[in-house]
Image 1 (cartoon, rainbow, N blue to C red):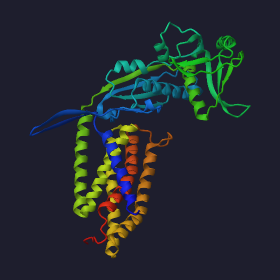
Image 2 (image 1 turned 120 degrees about the horizontal axis):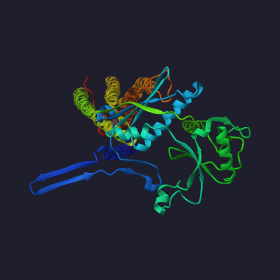
Image 3 (image 1 turned 135 degrees about the horizontal axis):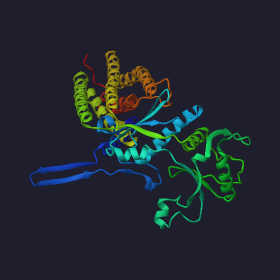
Image 4 (image 1 turned 90 degrees about the vertical axis):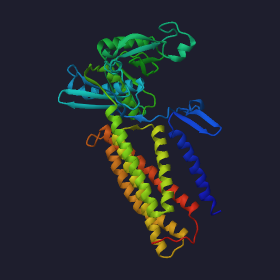
Length: 462
């Protein structure tokens, strides 16, 4: 029974390595074998990962995502014109404009984009980086326009005749314009219901909007009225009664965060901020490609020297640690593709730094094992004690680095901490590297030692 646990763990690790290897492979792998009468010339096509057929909303093309500094792309600097926005509403309007641009970029399909804001005095700017996008004019046409908000009523007829396939593609075609737009909406806010203390979203209309909204709700009692932003439905509330006061409430099980998000989207149309492109440039990938090649070459040389050092210093144990290091590389690349993580030059630096910390964990463990073997303890006991007593040092060192990574990544967007995308990339790859390194250093290395170096008579040269 004692030997079954490491054997089961070894089988699990082999299966995990096989899965990670398939994910880590390029999309197309040429297979060439020419020997004597054997002549094979083929190509392995790695399929994409699509779980939607199993009703699981997860789909990845399993390609590494490269940042702007590596693969090039387009950088656009937008300036928001706040001259017609009241001073008290400017912060909300600017946040709304940023959210709208972020959603447009997501719809454009650039998931590894970077969107940053900058404001000084009366200058409000949004910097958008779109890796891999070479058609700058198309990108500017998409993100450099003012958000358009309008209210639509549900009808049994669509705006234009459609086939069944078109209806499935556009299920909101039967929502027809009412003439009520964002210019008729003063503002939106978040309050708490007096009935159940649940968050609600409030709407306040202008005098003209009050009249239009009253007519719309009067003829749509029991039906839905859709609120669309850039032709995309942000909410489809049902009308319970005619609303003639010009002040409406949207309820429906909101959390505080989701209510705020809806309010921000509505204010993007209620407080339309004109957006002007002040700078656009196409960033070439040649510099980034050269830097990546040099970084990758330096990284491979460094990893090779570390692997050689481990073998020369620790012999068979060092070789098993190198196998764990190879496992670390496979798991890390697989995670990068599954999440996916945008790889930038600082991110690569974080990855290489985490490799050194992985090896450092193994060195601490092996040195503790040496001390136990010097005291004459059998190998199994020395290994157990070495892992156990080195764990405290490994845990403390890695937890401290994880805290540093957390502060650099700043997931809660604290303004007094870093908000740079480059630094965040470094922090994310470093943190993931540490977590994967703990797994490979403790689980993988330990399993390999228990399976392949189990002779109790084995001694260590000192």
